[in-house]
Length: 164
Image 1 (cartoon, rainbow, N blue to C red):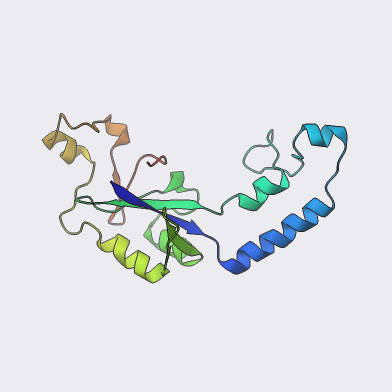
Image 2: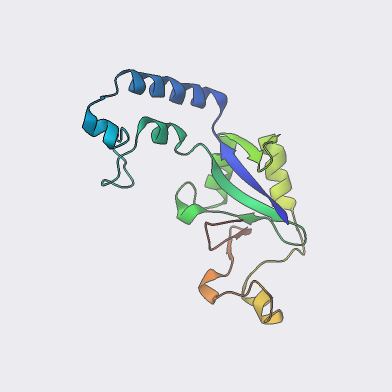
């Protein structure tokens, strides 16, 4: 059992996004084709074949999973294949650029969250790396080597972007 943490935008950023959403809705085309395509008329830079609708664009990037803490383990960061950050410095800048909430909806002071995450499980918390699986070959969570946790700038980073 553990707790997941997410970076959400600051209130001012959400207000700006809300105003853009209102403007898009006010000017939204309502042809039969647009209705049938669920109003997907906004270019999607990540997938040119799948445009966004105004709501998709509004919620995009509003809840970015940062990582998870679990008893007995070091904090496990989610680097999202380096989409938002790629090292400790850019991760901490990203966290500080928004707000942090846990999976129960409780907002955390960003500095308190950073301190907790960096200290969680230190100095002897577990890491799901080669050494761990060598010592625990029959562990229920065994996985192939390319799925072992990585170490980046002293942080435990999951090889997966999917957390439970």
